[in-house]
Image 1 (cartoon, rainbow, N blue to C red):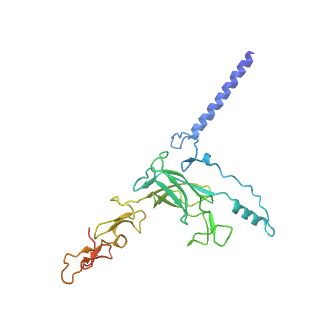
Image 2: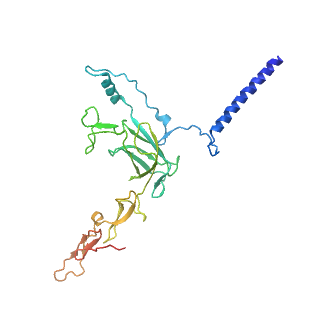
Image 3: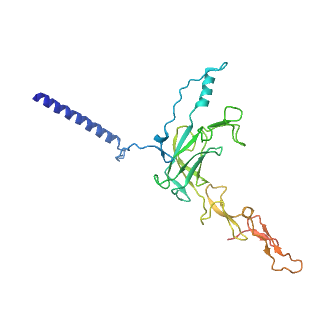
Length: 293
């Protein structure tokens, strides 16, 4: 009886020793070459646009079992089957450094993704869960009931037609995705690219500006009488906004009463002309060669 007791105690000590060795080994694997200890992360639900992925559910796999039509090869039947039954395509994007007007993008702002055919494939509303300046996952999908098609082909009646003015045939795989922050196209700064790949998860940071330095909203005119201005984007530098004179877009003031009327030959009203450099001049005035602030 005494020998059985000591044998039981010995087995317990051996088990405890094995657990301790495994624990130490795991800790050693969590130490970087610089000696920094990395706390292992606990598993957490993957979030897509604020919805746990477990709620959405996984895409069901399809068991390929095509029916071979008369005169059709097995490869052709398989290709037709997969074109008809392929699940929707998904590429996920996220970012940890997103700026709007040189500040972390605030909560409530919409980040939108579009295909190169200008079709919305997904969007994400910046929320308190992640905080300002971050987004993800942005679920850029195609082929679903509410998604743009994954491909189009004007010559194939079994596939969706391409948009007017677009290519004759197109496939989303391997094409770039354009991002918009609060409606303004963003400049991407990596570290990953913006190429759509099925089931990929990519880290894409970005910045955008939709206001000039004086607070004027992008593409908005200011009514400065003879010098109408607009917050515009530089044609050479993306997301660089500046105030330009733009009477051709913003227009000139309406007619003004002629102070010399009713003098001989004087019209009752004087009208403004839009000068080539963007300012306005009364009809009897000469457009300035150089606009000075």
